[in-house]
Every structure is written in structure tokens, then in C-alpha cells.
Image (cartoon, rainbow, N blue to C red; front, top):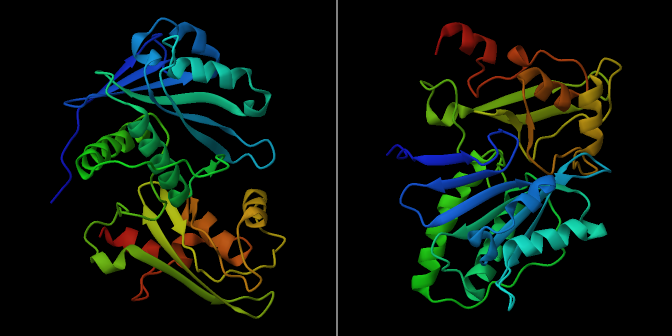
Length: 297
């Protein structure tokens, strides 16, 4: 059964697309805020940001340029301060200089207590690690806590909606690269969503063999692919750098899924040199991506 549509309301609090954003979902008690680090002071006095909740600090690693995230929780303090106060503390912390914006989840009815936010922090952190999109900065796993099965069901429903909102706010933090792809070629059989590349390398003489999945974001070279470890002079600089940073074991086996915007960049990553992805990537039946596109399938 096809997924049902969702009605999401995005309120540009400053009238700017890169300013503060408040996000709500129809028939959901949750509230989300996307707040640039530079705009925290403008949020003072908002009652819902004085409540308990879970927050995410997003930034970029200075060493690798990878996107990083820290997942945290904030409870209401004796002075009545909650999430916003915690974010301001992080802004003043020299060890948290990397982050440039925060995403916050709380509720319209102030229903989160210590147990709820501990559970959510644990689940969100684990989901982010499993998706392997961003580098998660949490040093230790947050405590899951003890909750009833009724409360667990309620919080898991909150998490399902939070995943949708997080993606809407521009962070695919919880979405694995190769899960549930939306293949462009809809008429292909379900088993044919995978593409394959197999050829003998001229540089090393080894048989390079990789698998790829086309999604609505691009082309994902899948973990377990056997890639060439020697670069050609013709390799694009960006692909060369990506190969250097990729997790590959001593045998040339890729240890992670990696997303590329074009089939040629995906193929170049695999063979370590210039490649035409439209002809290199083929279905299990030997039909090239170019033939598929030309056929109008």
C-alpha cells in the first residue's frame, strides 16, 4: 500500500528561508524548531522552548568536511528554563564550536518528562548511527530508561513523525542511503533495482566487481563492493579525494555505502579512473543503464 500523504506546516519566523523555522504536523502534538546558531537570542521568551525536549546540533568537521551531529536532551530546571537555555550553554562551550544550527523537538502540551526525553535521545542517537549519514559526536550512548509498553508505543509514533519532519527541515539524518529506494525506472521488476559493474582492471589485473542502487538522491555504491585501489591519472580530483576518505579494507572491499550524484562518478569511484557510468552499470541481465533510459522503461 502506498504511503499516505502528510500535511506539514512550515512557519518562517523571520520571513527568510535561512532563518528560524517552526514546523508542525497535522494531528501531532509535536513541535520542531530549526534555529541557526546566530539566532538563538531571538528565541528568548518562547514558552515551548522553556520546556523539556530533545535537540540536535548540526555542523561540519574542520578535518574532513563531513557533516556532524550531536544529539542531546534538556529537561526543565528549577528556574523554569529548558531547551533554549541548554542550547545557549552549548553556544558558549568552546568544545561545541563546530555547530551552526540546531533542530529541536518538544510538544505543544508540555508532556515530556525525564523518562520520555531519555528514551527519545537514546533512540534518535542510535538511529543516526545506524543510518551512517552523519558523524555522530556523542561520546557515550544515552540511557534508554525504563518505560511501559504503552509509553513506548506512544514515543515510537512520535519518532515516526519526527523522522518526517527532520527530513523536511533538510537533514536526512535517519534515512540510510540504500534503504527503500525510489527507482526512476518504475516498470522494472523489483529485483532489478540493483545495478552491477564488473571488469578487469588494466592497472592491477584484478577483477573489479561492485553493486549499486539507484535512489531518488542518486547512485549508491553498496558496502561489500570490490573496488580498484590504484588510481589512474584520469581520475577526477573529487573522486580521488572521496576514495582516499572511504572505508576500504586491505583487500579492496568497501565497508560502507557511498552516495554519488551521477552514475559516472559512481563508476569512477569503483575503477579508480574516468568512466562512463551509463555503459558501465548494468542490470543482472546485462542491460546497461543507457539502454534502459533509451528504451523509455
